[in-house]
Image (tube, rainbow over all chains, first blue to last red; front, side, top):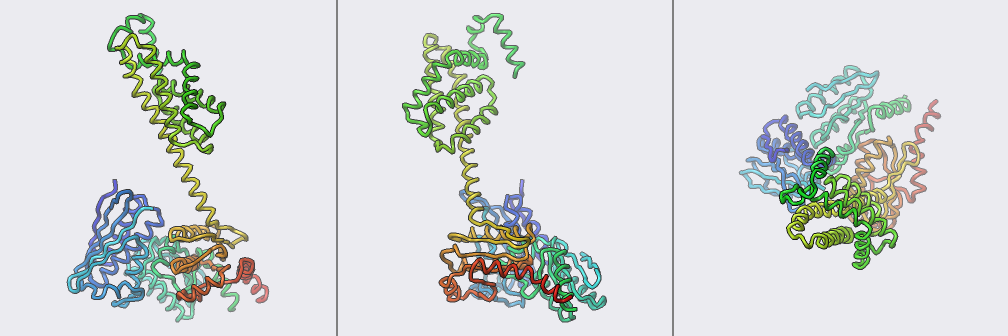
Length: 134
Length: 120
Length: 304
């Protein structure tokens, strides 16, 4: 039986590795193809990295999700960091405020099926992404 | 985690493990550049066959390694990117532009041999 | 199973009439009696069934002889399943039957229909046989109905599963046909793309090509898009991504068959064609691919 929910606290670069390993394991258990599991693990890696570089700490929650006729995985990346002032700008390819490649969020959106972001400057950011089994 | 670096003639071969943290990658980058200087290597092959995720940081590190090694007058070839990893990378917009790539270690060595012959 | 049968047989031979009068006789005993009845009247009941099938206009895609032949084997498997209560053989038979009749265009409702008809034909013959002994009829039906329903269920499910399998297989075949990765020379792959590309197909195509590059150790890939009718920004971006992903595996991609209209569209929507190695037609593309693959040989000879 796959665990319905897994949470990984992110506060160091080791945690990024742990989070994506757990994510891949869960995806494989849910029956995702290994190609999809790679996309999911990569998305988790990017999200965890964003937490680390912008908020220093936060967490990644992995959850099994069901819809009427399909099954999927949802990944929630949350932190209480500085938040994002201009989400539209952050979602544009090439935008970065921490000197990274700045491809994080738009790239993650391309890897996954659903993407939601909520952010409040000074209070933190929550990114929720989902991938459905084909 | 230690990344084994193998010296094969004029070529250094670094084999990446699956679960490299950012610190490991940074460590490896410095180690490789130092060894290129020490052994006066003409090329570096970075074998990423075991890596099941290549995110923006890993990809950036590979590019930086290639650029630093070019500054030392040597060449870098990235080998062994898995099809699924390549697919995820291009979705993220990580294309390792300007860095040589080859299917696997064997192809990487063949590529360098050609290169050495034409430049000798 | 055979052990239990031999025991009931013994008790049966001891006193047949006594057993029939005991109201709590085992259902299997009743089933045995039932099976004997169905065997005895095989010819007549089968005939009746076939007539009902034809009357109800089921299995219209099959000839009379075919219907009769299938009816015979369905009848025998049916009786056997009642007798042994082992459904594996029936399941296998249902699959086998489905395999044969699905290509003939037999529909699910027809298969369910004929099995239900058989159930009814047999039930009626039981009514006729036991009409004088109502209690016994009830007990016989108690034994018959669950078994009959299970048989109907088994055949119907077997048919539907087989149909789904065939459909899946066909979908897979169509998908593979629509994106064939062909090896024309050692280390050279050709991917002719025909028709409409949606994001799902684009992804599948890319994954297939990347796997193909790896298994064939390809160095050069020619993607021919002569057969692609239209290209929007999404499809164009997929094409660019395919080219980039192939390069990550060490393969060079040449795109051929780019019509002037599509080229114009790509330029207008701002797709960076500089990343793409394009050649007019497939022939030219293959020639260039061979030059790329043979290039080393030439330089080697020159460098000596």
